[in-house]
Every structure is written in C-alpha cells, then in structure tokens.
Image (cartoon, rainbow, N blue to C red; front, side, top):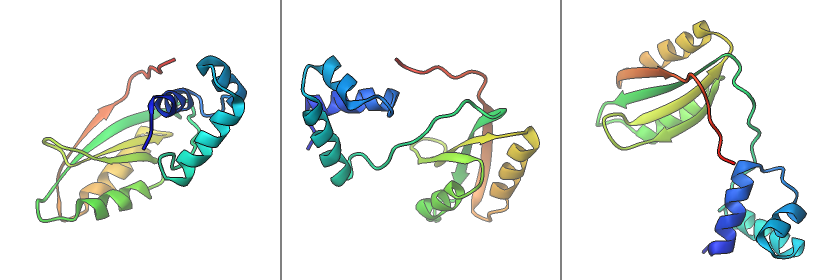
Length: 139
C-alpha cells in the first residue's frame, strides 16, 4: 500500500528517475534515508517495476491503434508486439481499439514495416496510426 509521500516520490521520479534521493528528500521535507528506504520497499513490492531512459524521438514516432478479433488472446498479441524493434510501449485499452503500441523508429519505412507485420496476424481486424507531431513533458 502506498501513502501520499510514496505518491509524491513516484511523481518526482516519473519526471526524472535520475533525480538524486537527497534532492527529492529536500523538496519533500524528509531525510534522504526515508526516500532510499521507500524506493527500495516500492521496488521490492513491485510498485516500481523498473527505471527507464527517455530519449528524444529518433525521427518518426507514432501511436498504432489495433483492433483484434473478440476471440483472441489480447495479452499474447500485446507481448509479441512489445518485442518488436522500435516498439517502446504497448497498452491493452478499453474502447474501439484493443491495443495501442507506441512506435519510435528512424524512418517512415520502418514504421510501415511494423504496421505491415502487425496486419499479417489473422486475428487483427484493423489498425489506425497516428503520427506524433510534438511531445510535451510535465515538470
């Protein structure tokens, strides 16, 4: 279970996972040891599953929305997509689409190759691709 302090720590780390614990502690008015032990506990409990590096987009970044047949194992397809080179994140979602993949590749041809690979699945009903024009990050 996480409390308000844990949530505030997570918010800061989501913005910058490299932020030193001493800086987080100073901003939140607690000791560095408190931050260290809470991050360790949240990591052990699986609340924090990993630390990532965000880079500037290579050249072409897109959301690929995928609608699949109702009798298909969505999780299996999502796991396969997550293994594709250039796919940075995959989400199972509600609504008209079933899966959204975030793709970050060097060229539009590489994006097209991923989309064509997805469309080869028998149980994929449709895809819709949205190019990302500009990214904005919270503070």
